Image (cartoon, rainbow, N blue to C red; front, side):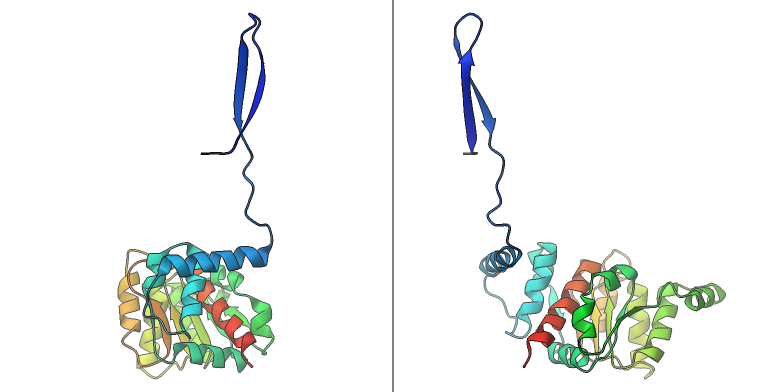
Length: 234
């Protein structure tokens, strides 16, 4: 039953009246660390049994925490070397390449910068826009062509554009790209699920998911989970 308070009085005819008003909601806690710990406890309880390894689970947990979507969390797919490769790239100071600004903004830069890395996005670069117009293609595609030349061994975090992921996959297959890790979780109805299925065929470290779900917050959550693990590693 909702919390309520009561006030009483009388009508003009002398009859008693009672007014019931709902109490204001009070949060369980306002301490950030307690909120996070409680959230993670709820996630663990509600997720139940799963097949993720101890190494992979913190990434899954962060994705569910960011999305409140257990189906999305369960759909995550890891290359066997993915988590170790991501941590190694961060600790080696390799750059993180984001497909769009939303991913770049969400990634915790101090943790990346602590090891000498940075977070880059190329999609709005003037030369990328000019080349995309000249070729009659998307800026996302051209941005990946530029990124692989300037960010070898880095983490490529793609949460928005399936065309960016498909181009990166093509560049890997032709030997033009050598990413340390591909985080490929674009969201959408056109080519998103298919691009992730293609990524899962590569023999390079990747983290992706099955289906249409994903998005920039998912890519951010994955990279932030990896940077936390890199920071905590002795």
